[in-house]
Structure formats: structure tokens, C-alpha cells
Image (cartoon, rainbow, N blue to C red; front, side, top):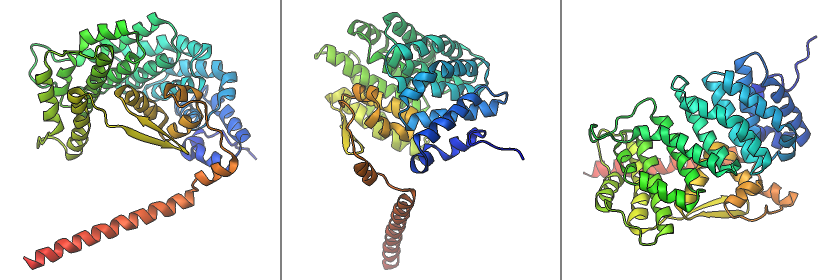
Length: 401
């Protein structure tokens, strides 16, 4: 009789997620399963390797496993490097995503520096490789930016990474011979990821470098606002708002020559009623550009509140928003847990040391799956009832007329 171990199928962890282990298992169970997944990153099957990478990433995104990872960081780094070099698109994406979370777990220090030193050249090669898949290059661009943000202690390495990302997204800039609209291409998604990663790194640059980049890009970035891709328009707008924030932080009387032209463009995007654009895109765009317009014109930022456990954090500037959005994209639903427990992220957002909670408090904070299901069902019923009432009123009005 053959015996199937608990970790022989990596997809079981990726599908169930760490939530199952949180509720039913123990730390030992999780570590046992993770050891098996690490072994499976060397499997002959590409699908098995990819599923193993995704399973490890899911675990690290939702739990702090610093000691466990510290002991195996070299093995993990070697596996990620191998999958990046020899794998195809999906495997490369899974490997790059795991590399990002690995550095988030390790935080700044010699260990994450070693990870970046090993993986940086490979990531850079994929990003610049025109024959690699766009999706893989996109994930690698984000990973390269994040790992550099966390790990690099070398200013020349930081500038080199900025230049690599810059070389990618500037290809979307409007050329003099082009029309007034930038048409999206298959590379647009890569350019967006590179621009956002570049903007993140700009927030940790010395003022002299920030000033240099401002002079180079503040007059060219507005051309990306005419892209026919809504995500590019939004990325360009948010990057501009952040550049203006940095510029005014250095010089309170910062003067932008084409302010009138820029505000007209931003106002048009904040009130866009173009019939050729999807309703969802227009709604999303208008909401973001109202905030961007306020930032550029009035130096104002609409403060957002992020709640996690018994704590809350205020996002009150574009630098903080770019940083939060980047880590939220990587960690997903695990962002709240990391804000509570990850010392690196708590330092980045100036939250102080982790708040120690006793078991009773944690239990009251936790909602079981059944309770969450009941809550969602009740909310759905309430919405349905409200819609029905609204329809009834419209019907009555119709009959009256």
C-alpha cells in the first residue's frame, strides 16, 4: 500500500491556504509542510515546482516565520534562482513573488542583502530580456524594486536599480513625432510596474538624487496621462503627485512652469465622461484624479485610515500611500497580519514595536469561517431587500405617471 504524505501535493497548501493551519493546526504542522514544499521546488515537474513556490509564498505572506526562514534562506534563495533561470513564465512569476515575500520576512540586514546580491542580476536580466514573457518581466520589476527598497545598503546599487527601471518605463513617454494619445502595447503593463517600483525607490533616495530625477522626469511624466490605458494614466498621475510632494518637501516654493496645462489635464481626467471608456474605468479614474488634482493644486492629501487588530494607521501622504500600496499588492490579505507583527513594516510606517496581545484578546478578534459566512449572508440579504424596495418605489412612480 502506497503512502501519500501531507506535503506531497503542493497544491493542497496553495488552495487551502494558511488559514486552515491557523484554525486547525500548529506551528509544527506548518513547518513540516513547508519543509516538504521547499523540497518540491527541486521537482522535475514545472507545475509541481510552481505550486510549491506559491504554497511557500502564501505561508510567508500570512505568518511571521523569521526563525524558520533564517535557517533555510540559502536553500530558498538557490531554489528561487534556479526557477528564475530555468523556468517559464508562470514559474518565474511565482519565484519572483516568493523572493519579494522572503525579503519582507527577513527585513533589512545582511541576510536580505545576500538574497538581493544573488537574485538581483537574474531579475535584472529577465526585466531587460525582450524575449521573456511580459508577465514574468512585470513581476520581476516589482520584485527588484521591493527587494532593493528593503535590502540595499549600497547607494550605487540603488542608483543602478533606478536606472534599470527608468530604461523600461520611459519607453512609454510621448515622442515628438507621436500623436496626442499614447496607444497601449503588450509592454504597457511592464512599464506600469517599472514606473511604480521606480517611484517607490525614489522615496528612499538622497535629496540630491531626487532633485536630479525631478528635473529629468517632471516635464515628461505628464505625457503618460494621455495613454489609452487607465492603469497607466493612474500610475502616472500618482507618481506625479508623489514627485510634487517630494519637490515641495525640499523647496516649499517649488515652481512648475506648465502648472496651468497640467491642472487642465488633471481636471479633465477627474471629470472624464468619454463614452468610449468603460464605466468602471471612468469611475476608478475620476476618484483617483480628484485626489491627484487636490495634491497638485492645493497641496492636500485625503487621509486614509487602515485598521488592523486593535490598532490603526493613517496614510496621510503620497509617499506613505505608494509604500502601503506596494506591500499590500504583494502580501494581499496578509498585510494586516504583517502590520501587526512584522518589525520591518512597523518601522517603515513608524508604528513602534509590535503590540503584545494575550490569547483571549486574539480569540475575540478572530472571526470563524462560519461566523464570516453568516455575516456575508446577512449583508447580502440586506442589500437584496434594499434593492427590492428601491425597485418597488420606482414601479409605484411609473404607475402614478
